[in-house]
Length: 84
Image (cartoon, rainbow, N blue to C red; front, side):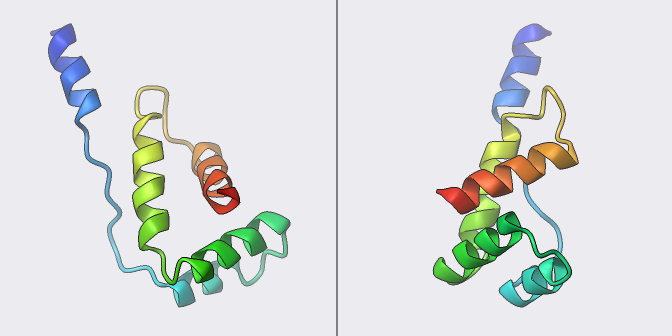
């Protein structure tokens, strides 16, 4: 059983439902005037879309499946992405 669980956790696939665009991200971040929000928006604009962000975020969140994907983990991963 342990081997099966290990295999499943190593091969889990994380994806996001729904359509998200740069405009939608702007809408979500409009009311937040934090350095992190501005930095993330700049990174998304620089990358010309959200595809790289979503792929990177999904890969990073996969590492947290065992311990839990919390809002704090997602925020930390978005901040790390925007700083890269």
